[in-house]
Amino acid sequence: MLLRPLFSVVQGESLGLAWLTAAALIASSTFPRSAVAQTFFYNEVAKGDRIYVFASSSAYDAFVKSDGADLGPVIERPGYGPGCETVVFDSENAINL
Image (cartoon, rainbow, N blue to C red):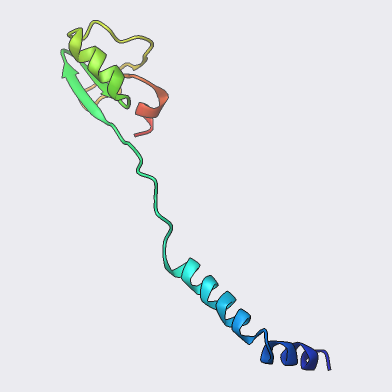
């Protein structure tokens, strides 16, 4: 009994609106939204018995320009490298790469 009034509304003037709504739902699930480009930076520098890992391009640039003298705050993990080298990370993001 309850479906009959609903069916008559859809069958009347609202049929075009129902199709338009269905088409919009299908299109929105079919076509992906445009993704915002994400910048990703990763670089390793082996120097002596240390491996420097960078997730920030600005930290890497400062390191290269200062010939390894300018590091700022870092996270060191002694014996963390594949040959038991000390690995120096520029940030927590570098650890998670």
